Length: 536
Image (cartoon, rainbow, N blue to C red; front, side, top):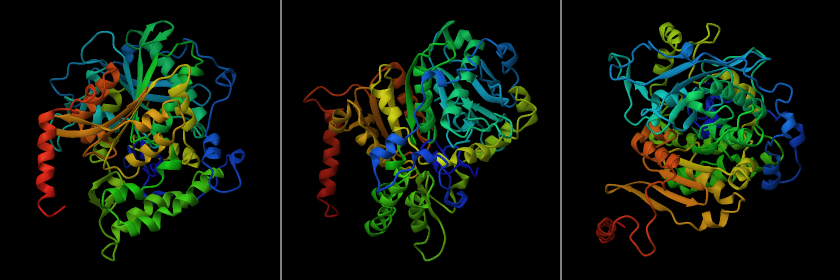
């Protein structure tokens, strides 16, 4: 859990299963070992963005160990046939186990693959939680997977989820990087940089695809359509993985990556470390309190532009907000939950609810056996320290150049950013600031687009903005883990994204009401009554 700090933010510290590390869990400031990225002078966003990691030429990627058909698995050996606690109404096929990801270090990644509810050819959704080091089993059991935990004390231990994303596609949940969940490596094998992560992920994915050609391959050389999805620090992983598969693949497979859905994503620390704007907009802190904290943003950005990607100045932009909310009465007490501002908590370390029950279930010996987990694999933890410790030095390193390439490059894909409006640590204002500043061919069009309300029935559930292949959705009444808080809306969102339909329905024709003339008239009537009440 310690590892969950900030990085998660944008994927998920859950202890931080989906989140970033809480203040008390962070370790002291340490200068990044990436000495070649240090700059002098004041905060300079262009220097910072140009310093962001980009891959070397294709020959530098796994050139000495191109993948072959070796180390494949027998799908029958990984079929899950006797999962403890499986409900009687479960009828789907699923597979789980370990796949080699690095032959040199003994790295192996744990996966759980569910066939689409309606059988037949289908795309695949690859779901990743953040951390680094938080297990994607949080996503499976607590957010969007086919199975969920039963109420405490109930039997059987599991229930089926009606809003599961495997209604839209095959669903693949992966614990990565090595050291996460059941995924394991040697003591010196933890990934210390992004290239290690994406190299190992393609190795894993190629071996898994060749082992499940009926689900994951169109033919021997081409994958089925792939959609990545994830939250928090997965917003850092996923763009780099997509870039790797599209531009630098070494597996001999043509990866048909169509797009990525990034939830509360940690992509651009330059704009996202600050939490004061979001806290002020939510009424958690006052203008005066916000003004005292936000001045630290320039100091944070100066650190980033000089190549210092771990600093107190940057972390204070959230930590000071949390301290203010906890000391209003003159003593340490309840304060805002950094993952969901609707909650008052003494510590965010116990978020998300029931993550400890996920750990208990996954560590049952009969469950480990049913999921074909290596006996040598470590005890399952929702969020593990070693992967986080190995990668924490690049907490403030963003993926903005990669986003530009994915939007504008010769193999451009669709990107959906979705955010809960109550998250602080990876708040929607930071994501919006980042996308507004993103230099790509659709920037002006995106900036000029008006938000469109997504209305279901007579309830506004979110607001959408779209330009070319970039889409932004802010979901109401949800925090860091949108599918957990709004499962029906999240399923509609991902189904629309995969099928290419506009989220929330087609935009209105010019001059037409945005959703329903009668509905708009009713809303305007309510506002007029409120305005005339003397309380406005």
